[in-house]
Length: 252
Image (tube, rainbow, N blue to C red; front, side, top):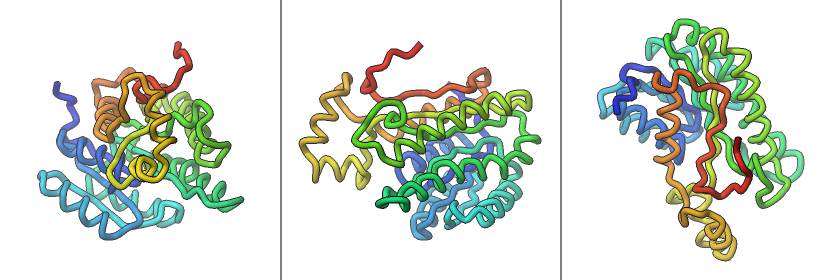
C-alpha cells in the first residue's frame, strides 16, 4: 500500500531511540523528510546519518525540549530547512524522580513540550495540505498499572489535551490523534531491563496479554505512519490502543 507520504515533512521529539527512532525510520522509508531531536549528541548524529543515507532531508539537533525557547527556535529552523512541517510527533517523557521532581519532570516533558511543539508548528501547518499531530501516550494512562505515579498521570493528561486539541484545530484542517502502546520490547529499553531484573513482574505482565508477547517499536511506528498519511485523512480525535489485548476495558 502506498501511504502517499513521499515528500512529507515530519518533526519527531525523542527521535533517536525506541518508538521515536522506529517512527523516524519508518517514515523516512516512506519518503518523508525528518526533523528529530534528542538530548544525546551521539545518538542524534547516528540517527541523522542512518536516515540521510536513504536520500531524504534530515534536520537533527541535540537539545532539551524542556528549554522552551531553544525548542521553539529549533522547530522554526527545522521547518525552514525542510521546506515546511506537515506533522508533529510528540514522543518524549520525563524522569520518574522522587517527590515533586518526578512530577515536575513528567509535566515538563509530557505536557509542556507537546504544547510548545504544537504552538511552534502552527505557522507551518497553515501552509500544509495534510497537517497532523500524533501524541505518544501509554496504556498506563488508561488503567491502573504499577503505581499512582507521575508518568501515568501525565500521559493521561496528554490524552485529554490531544482530544480537546482535535476539536479546536479541526476547523483548520489539522488532525490530532494519540497512540497508547502497551508493553513494547526494545533492546536496552525498560522492558528489557524488567525482563532481566524483575522476572516475576515481567512474566505476570506477559500473562495478561492475550497475544502472548510484547509489542515492537515498529508496530507502533506503522500506526503512526497511517495516522499521518493522507489515507488517514478522516481520522482525528482518536486514541489508538496497541497492546495485544492487555487492557481489559471494552472500547466503544
